Length: 289
Figure 1 (cartoon, rainbow, N blue to C red):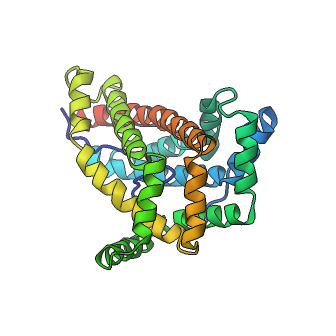
Figure 2 (cartoon, helix red, strand yellow):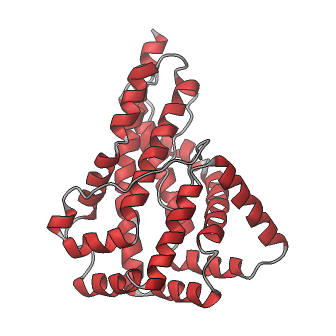
Figure 3 (cartoon, one colour):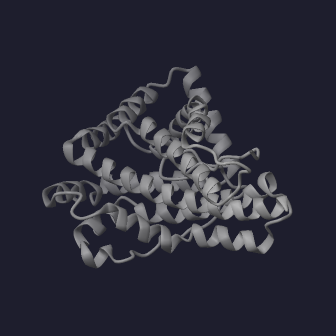
């Protein structure tokens, strides 16, 4: 079996490989949800999902390009770049995300309640902070500064960390991110296997065991990423304002919104990671000839 570097999902509030420089990334238009379910679209637009999906597309393309050096050095070239661009096209990610939402994932009263909050002055400041921090983390230097700030906050016993722990617990943020990353890695392995990257058939059980062995590592990385990101994202909020946000995400409507979004993200990146593995397998097989 080839020595494989596992690709992990880069999504909203998820562990991702930073780039060497920040990029200006524009939100991607709806693929039809704006006409099919305008109230839901307006809510997702208000929380910045279309900006996040655009950033995820750029990050995943960069991660995919980096595979060549580890898995089939010197064999990819323009063809592999085209694969990375095609698989993680921003327009395609948006279309898959909107399809994965399904029909009526949120009740009209839930959409109205959430929209009222996120369209308010406080809600828009929260979203602006989240998106600004997300963009900043596309620069490896900015992420390292944020991680240093987290270490300093821990050393001085910063009370904000307890609030962030409450926030993350309320919507099970760490477990959800780790689960998506593990499932994405498993689907990547399945794509490699189906694409003929291995000399022998590899059972799913073996691939699952390989992926499960990285859970502790991923959990540590997710905790570090989340807390350093959130310290930056919510740095302009008062403690009372952050408590208001925590109360919102703890409501049934807030819980439903986060579950719906994470389920959609999980579906999208499981599909794309499988396709990435399948595409990589073709280059690996050619390298073996």
